[in-house]
Image 1: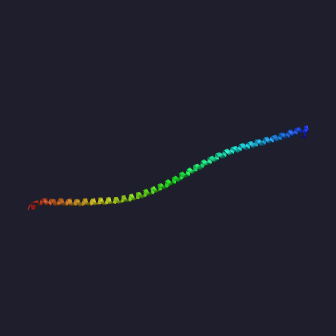
Image 2: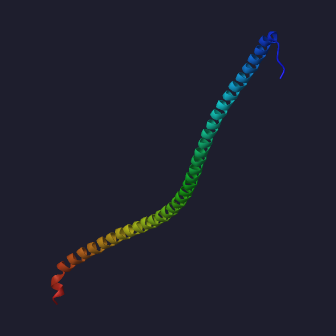
Image 3: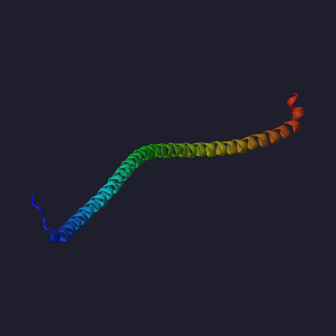
Length: 137
């Protein structure tokens, strides 16, 4: 190896210090990049967990929505059945009310007729009492 002159030694040291500074800068930059990459990786994992949890919540909400839609359909059917039943009950009630009114009217007419018969019997009995000696003969 060739020997360097002593007057070049300071410039060589300066050059070596520059290279060392550049290597240190490079190592520091790599360390910062590695740290940042680790932070980003952890953040990515966290976001992935959040996404999975959100997908699970979405699936649960979808199932709940489907169950609610089924329950609503069942309630609609039950409501329609109740409306039909109510209508049939109302019609039966109206018919019974008409029949009841007819029975009441028939009863009123019977009471009137019975009153007339009772009145006739009273009048006839009074005549019979007056004419009782004629009945002996």
